[in-house]
Length: 245
Image (cartoon, rainbow, N blue to C red; front, side):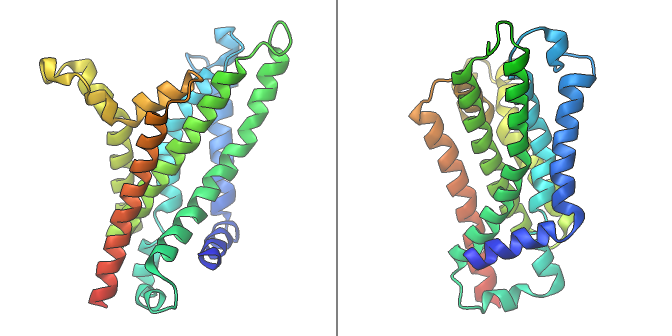
């Protein structure tokens, strides 16, 4: 697994792809938070609060992470190296986890420089340090789990398609549905009284819950279950491919 993880990291940062991912994420966040006027602009809001960043980040990740994961298995299939990879003395789980953690590490590297925003808000607060540390830590943990969930979805999408663009579109669609669609159904009351509890199925509900700074085991179990579910789907897809090969 470690060898595959290292291979994935090298493949990302041996080309401009990895640097573009980090640069695009930080540039977009910085522009929306400090330059563009609007609800996400921290200076316009006048509050020493990183809530705009944590509201914005899942939207950017919904496109950025599928762009990271789309080539994980699709590229191997397109180049015809998938069969060779599956004949290596590496278990399918190690293969899947190596690909998964490689892509996830790139996402974390992109997220790490955002800690600069915390120090910025800390310094801009009046009085100095007027920032809700508990809510900030809870939001970061929630964002890490959202990124981990998106990555597992992206890895699965890459496994079911040999075309990177198709894998990207499938991943974006699934991430959007699992994060935002259930809230939309609840807001529009599409099923009347039956809407009760539908929002619990979406990532957004559990992410917002963690952003309040209160850690609930139900939120942790939800995200970990979602990650394991899509990694299992990927495992079964790779197992099926190995049998056919």
